[in-house]
Length: 153
Image (cartoon, rainbow, N blue to C red; front, side):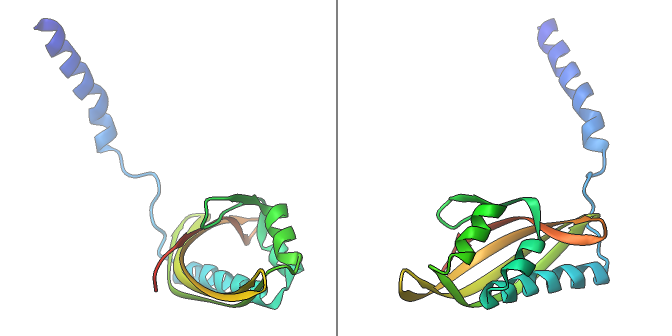
């Protein structure tokens, strides 16, 4: 019985300081930052449709990772090669309902994206929920991660 009390006291004592701490990541509500990140996310969609691969590649960090709707992981070079191959083509990409949250030099954009694409010779329309993560390095925002989840319209 004494051992049980000791374990409870130790557990409560160790966890009490943790519960009193403030969250580490505080949302930064700077309108200018939100606008800059939102614009960049929309511009990246335009670059993909236009096939502007040099500008697109310049917006990705060297350690960029994309998780596709099927769970496949692509790093910067793989994503860049896939888009540049011309095998598949984005005909239109429409990000909507963008929600931007910033935390200092990190920003997260969640959006609903409608994509019209030519895949393997067929034109298809897909609807996805995207989560894009950006970091600010040397005064510029760079995309470090993107993840797509298929959804119904």
